[in-house]
Length: 264
Ligand SMILES: [Mg+2]
Image (cartoon, rainbow, N blue to C red; front, side):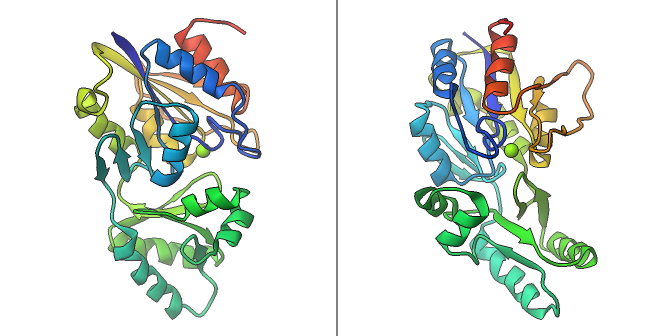
């Protein structure tokens, strides 16, 4: 029987923010799966990127892509507004401004995505394959940013800060998809038998992880690239741990201590 379900951000949480290093992660994921503990990638990355990571890490679980906007196991559920529907409106708004405002993945070539992210060419191509979210760099003034965000709100959209970019997207979060998964946990994870009182362990580092971390029974907050931490307003009974080490070593250390009761 499964006691735990792990859901985790990737960049800066499972993978090192600067180098994307994942040393030791395949080994601990194998150990978790051997102990019937599923690991659900829950990222701002695209389904194409997460599918590649799922294969690389030999994961059996579904994935949650594009900040909760896409859930994919045997079936794919879109929880967000499709970019093909809203991007033309954002670009029309931008064309009406008399000052610089933003540039995003849909504007950039694969080479430009490589420059902005440090991904390889192949990875950057997967990162451009977006369904419901548009990562942008804000290039304008703070006051124009306020106007932009109120325009997004009129369209039922929002702008959320991630590790590298702002993400324009519908009113969903990493917690929205997690809640949907929790409602039908045996449907999404048919290979696991969950205990009635199983616990969710969530790991993240950025603002876009906040809702997911707050929805978890145990939250692990990883240090941001500058060494600071996201501050969480915790619920009564919720355990929050601030990882001393960055990814990937911090992820491994916290999971080992919490789930396997090992001290390093
Ligand atoms: Mg992150």
